[in-house]
Image 1: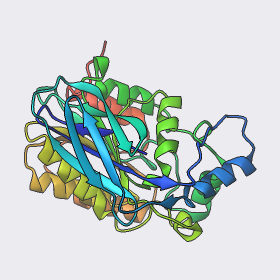
Image 2: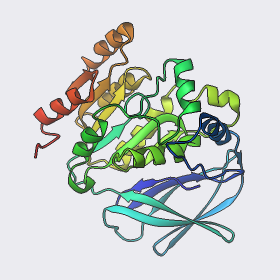
Image 3: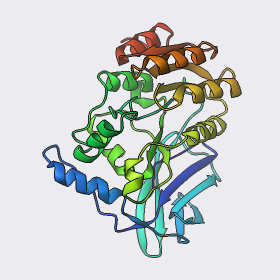
Length: 309
């Protein structure tokens, strides 16, 4: 199960899982709640296969990596010749089994990149309200879950014509939900981009705690992107419910001059939002706490991130 990779003209970063008992989760808007429930449970009941050699083949290069104890593999491959920007196909093999994947090569001469959270930033999730979150996770599917109003227009405008500005989705959702997210983003016609998610989890207890944890992995993955593209500036988008403001403020301090703007969706918790305002005042970059996506769209237009047609 390869995930979308990313890279520059000199290297690519790819990852994936080797799993068994992993069915295809084909969702339809008319699916019954019980089917959605079964599918979501099954996503957390797959068995990972450790210590398996995976072949990664790109153009004329062959690279081999071994899965860890969770069946996860990760590789950074130095390219022997420059590669044009855009999406490129890779092949992943285990013995005689062959699966195609893809990676996004980014030209750092583009205007900027976008790093966005997903839950309660793009996807309505109620991540800070356990019962409401579980009801959505267990009874809805990729065809029936909803984005926030205006998200498609905002993200497509940030991506620009022909999606020249890359968008990376960094989330505390687990890799278990990768296929769901791909389906959701395609269904809602949101810009295509690599997903950088939290470690694969197994068991019903882990499903209940989905999206939780310290969220430190977000900072690690954002820093990896900043290092992969040292000449590229970024717009950061998140919400006030899962430490995004603190993480983004840390990124601003660690990589001065690299962040063009920050947009934080308010989860309408007065105490949390007041704390966030204190954090963002020190960020030193254009930043907006917004309740609705169109507020972010208007601000991005005023500072030149979006050009009105």
